[in-house]
Length: 296
Image (tube, rainbow, N blue to C red):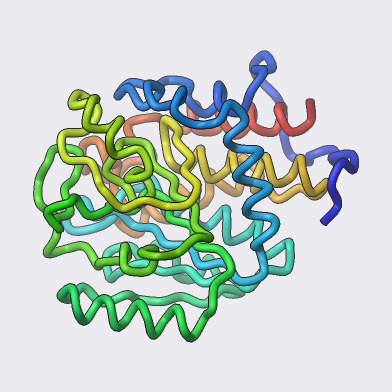
């Protein structure tokens, strides 16, 4: 690991906004739902701490994603997971991407260097056994969840409108139970990892009425989970001295590909080039800000 080495100039990037002092400030811009209320419950330099945590465990990385919306998966999650897969692959990591039949189509063909796993949508015991078999096979040194619905204490998966989506959601939580080498990424309180702040989420009913209780070792919050995934890569880039970020054009291309395959804007269920209601200009601007922070 090449700590404290100069960050090389990032290509294909034109900054467009003033430097913001912390990565957390960048990633919590445009917050409409109130996820920023959780910021004080996490370390001030949470992204850098989590990047250090990730770099120390980067040999074999398992990444899960895919949030069911209207018969498909939403646009938040897969682009972030693919960005992480690319970044860790540049470090020489063995990367495995896991989703279910709704999320996997948006990972295929973009990940030729990664192992893809279609986790079955089945009952608790079958899921537990499948997860154990997969963990035994891969022996991951790091697990990351990007915008993946997590179980409530009642054992149900609920979306942002409190609708039960359990029949359409594989129990990927089973991969994280008992793991001490995990990172959760979420933006609403119902994603795997957010259970780390379960008591605090219970005090924020306007953010989420049915928070998940599934916790991870480290937790990253952001206005949009894709942004948090790129934020983690930005922090890893600063620490490693190696550019692990995708370009703005690459991320835009991924968004277009998955929408063209049927991914939907999670806010309204429409196939459009938006993520959680934010258009391409906003999404591109956040990645530009991350680049500026890395280079600052």
